[in-house]
View 1 (cartoon, rainbow, N blue to C red):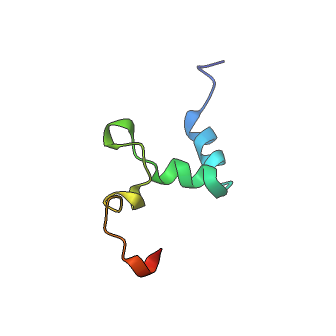
View 2 (cartoon, rainbow, N blue to C red):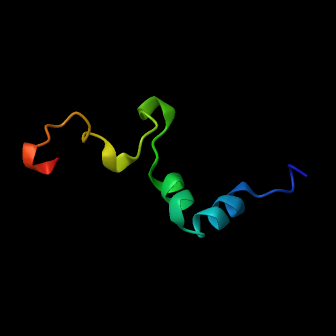
Length: 53
């Protein structure tokens, strides 16, 4: 069964469903890069102005 499966078709189907699953597939970095969303890199630890609390 493994030889008959098509992993690219499965990932395409999952990604086409949208929502958090699609966001996770498209935007989460690999373990060696921190396992975080790519749009959050460099945002953590930044100063937050007092008026933003």
